[in-house]
Image 1: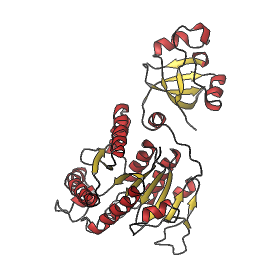
Image 2: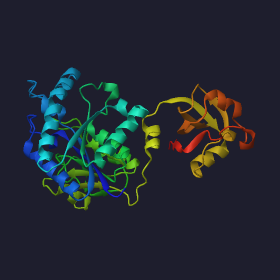
Image 3: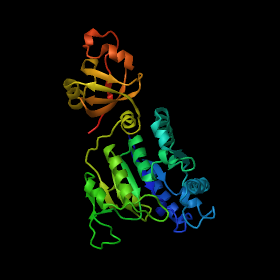
Image 4: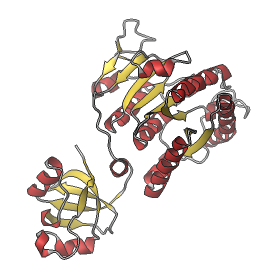
Length: 362
């Protein structure tokens, strides 16, 4: 990848007035900051909240609705207003906006997951700005991301971004609530996210947003584990994104020097796939796949449970301990016939789970 790839997440509180209306001056400033990046050969993906917040006032609500049908209706109204505002702001600088509305189901379905990735890649190739939001209009509780913080983390992994920038109205992570504790200390740089850090964060959000600092920290943890460095903070100038990428942002950097990115296939297996059976392996096979980067062969399998077909994802156990998940290259009946056999005893393909289709669970 010749160009640097950045995912920018903008929350509702950073886009709207307190009464829920779009703050066009804020939106244009965000767009100008994105344009600054694109003009410097960055590939940018925008994950933008604001649909519900932009729509509820038009619906006659005095505040953000709490019912599912109210949120969905407000999103239906607000999403068109939001993308129209982005489109008009970008057009003045000669750029095109593209809208993608996603649900968790789009990530869980392997084909939809790949299609989303391919669509984003094509848009970036054409120098179009993908603007992604959760499809609140049709989402149900079981299929939501919870908030766009988590969606931005998953998108950053999907597109193999170098950096996720989460813009919010608080300038970073603190060891206590800075609005309550004046002596609260900000974390300028972190190289990991611990349970202790998560306990510092509050889950309370603003009047127009859904995610508090705890949500952002959980999203940062997801992105970080996918090999994406993260910034959480604020900024109020057209150069804020460049300043953040240059290390001068007003917030917290969560980064490692050489992050190891995870392939799209492994991301899908790890985060979204459903398993359709279990494979139990011996000590030698465990050592081979966990420590030596090898694929799983039939010789290391001694027990199978469940019915699965080629291409399904299965749980992989060492005795009673779950050690990973993988996409299997046999169906359950075929594997039962050749499990425990050496390679020279098998006539067809020998790999049960290829190393590129295996993820460990630690």
